[in-house]
Image (cartoon, rainbow, N blue to C red; front, side, top):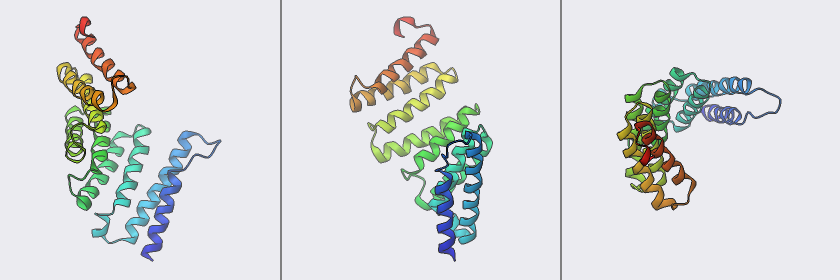
Length: 205
């Protein structure tokens, strides 16, 4: 039945994300996990109407997990396709501004950044930022992290002043939320210092 099919799919997904048996190489475990996850996708799709598939967050989550495996294997174009499927299902099921979609945008931003597709990376990171600010407020630590992600994209693209602006936004939030002595605050100071060093502004580094 459809219910049995979905239960089997959930089992396959659980097995795939728990492949930590000793004595197996990471590559072999990843390949076995991908097989299980793709089987889960097939089961989900076989157990549901096409309309249900377009709004099933379990299916979206499985695409997200597959995307993460592919990303870790360096298969960036394939990872992008999986993260796009996750995002598309999430938008249909929850609406484009739902907080759960922030992670999907972040994942896409990260893959595009690895591919050197800077504008695409920035677009998805900014979408994530807008969702987080609306859902959590502008002073939440997750918002600070997204500012830092955007700053890293700018930094690696040589847009140093834009990078500093994002790192400073991150710093202000982290100081307020975490306190000056927190390790994340120290990391942000280091990021700003690195940008200033590359600019030749050694007194500000």
